[in-house]
Amino acid sequence: MIKFLRDYQQKRGQQKREQQGREQKRELLRKMPAPAQLQVALAAWLETPLGKRLLEAESRQLNPVLSRIFGYHILQISSSNSTQLLSESPVGHKISFAPDYVADIQQPVADAEALPLTSGSVDAVLVHHALDFTPDSHRLLREATRVIMPGGRLLIIGFNPVSSWGLSKLLRWRRNTPWNARFITASRVTDWLKLLEFHVESVNYGAWVPPVNHAGLMRHAEKFERLGNRLQLPLGGFYLIVATKQVFPLTPVVKRWPRLLPTVIVRPVTEAAPLAAPHRREEVSLEPCSDTSREATNRTQSRKSRFVKTH
Image (cartoon, rainbow, N blue to C red):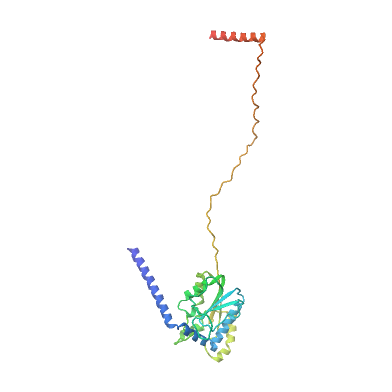
């Protein structure tokens, strides 16, 4: 009975957690705009002075990493098709999908959570603020890691909640784009990557300028960036995570056969004695016996007869 109650409580707790997760996803879906609206709104915000300064800081951190990545295919996953950050990459084939169809733009459309690519077919993937604008970050991250080949690179750029940008999000009453994004901490993303068998190489930060669209403040943005790059405190407006997909080779389990004992060769200490010569039969002479031999035979017979009589 006690075991039944314990199992029932565990099952009810799991159902409540699943229900809370579904409600959180619905709440996120209600807050987040549709992909087409998000694409237009994010592209418009990136044209502002603060958006341009953010892209410059991200490119400054990203370009040295892209220049060291080689291969045949590289993919960019972003919430806006107007942002192309792969220009400094030496990889020949650059792939990017638009989240929704936009007129006058010739670009393939695909869902970032269901990419039309085979598993292990891409050398590197850049996730540019896509985790911040999706209701299911786990699914998008699993899809991004699926298409990376063994030994490939994963680059993730996201908003840092532990910064002046995260504080600005909390203080805003009306959260327009990009303040309606999910600000996920870098430590949480690195924990997800470790579960997906990725080795995190580095975590860098940038955009130390306060998120204010003020022309006078933007003139001094370069000073903030130099100071932040020198100190490298985890308080920048965005983070850049570089991770490598690890491959653990499988060692086949072979059945161990019993060890065979070595053959023992016995050698005699001394050599065997030579075999005796074969017995030779003496030839019996058939010639008549002489007188002396006849007399000796008669004496022997007489002794035997006397011995028998006495006994």
